[in-house]
Image (cartoon, rainbow, N blue to C red):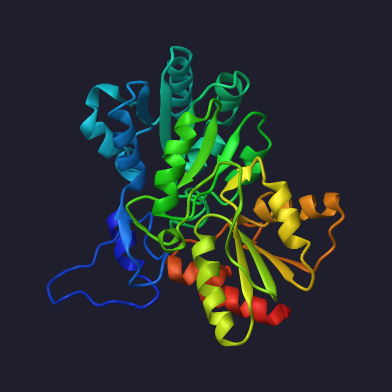
Amino acid sequence: MSDQELSRRSSKYTPRKAPEGERLATSAMIASLDSEGRDTIAAPFGHALVDMAKDRDDIVGLTADLSKYTDLHVFAKAYPDRFYQMGMAEAVMVSAAAGLAREGFTPFATTYAVFASRRAYDFIIMAIAEENLPVKIVCALPGLTTGYGPSHQATEDLAIMRGMPNLTIIDPCDAVEIDQATRAIADHPGPVYMRLLRGQVPNVLGEYGYQFKMGKAQMLRDGRDVLFVSSGFMTMRVLDAAKQLQADGVDCGVLHVPTIKPLDVETIVAEASKSGRLVVTAENHSVTGGLGEAVAATLMRAGVHVPFRQIGLPDAFLDAGALPTLHDQYGISVDAVTASVKSWL
């Protein structure tokens, strides 16, 4: 099934009908991640790179045959002499990026998250992380953002990459944060792995006056009954779930944690220590080895004992299909999040 065919089958929460004689098309990377009516921003990663590259001739882009599907084509069009198409060879791509970094460049290497974390892991370790080189590995299709099945669903990438020394890991929420995080990681002196939403990406954090800070978690809203600790597009989901729960008299706080490693231990412990709240982690990742387990270990080591639950993907190979159906099935849709929290209170 092609990207276009899957995209047309993956409508958003409310099914839409195309005008007679026309077919609806959405991006396979972003389809069904957000509710209808939210503003979107096109290709925030690609446009941020182009903007930075105007003043920084050290920025270069590499991809493993996926420029269109990681929004790197925007950069390639603007700066063709600083763009490298490496073909379907992730190990070659990250090794070349390491070489460019040694020569003073700041390489942004893009592919799908499954290919970076599974295929290129050893090369990232040996060529980039061990040498602490400033290579930025930016990967689309994180977690359950595609209906293609286990071959493309990077449900365990954070667990894999968290064990790598020297590596900073970023899981941004929306277009605002992708733009800001791209600029921040360009200035970071070491290697970075960043998950990516591409195409028409929702603007969620704009209304909160949000400013990304590497290594820092930030409270988006406070609440007395539940504390959501979330990352990635699940922050979109828990913000919407918090509004639904508010209507039922449940007051929810949302602590957004875009930097998975190094974790903002101080803020997480301080917020979780406030008495009387159920702590619920929410992530677009397996419940094994991701944000939820990192937060649980953090609280245990700090001696903070609170009611604790995880929302995440199961430790299993997931089905293929339309994203709204899969998100409901695996408990990460807004309605599923709301229902889970109600069952725990």
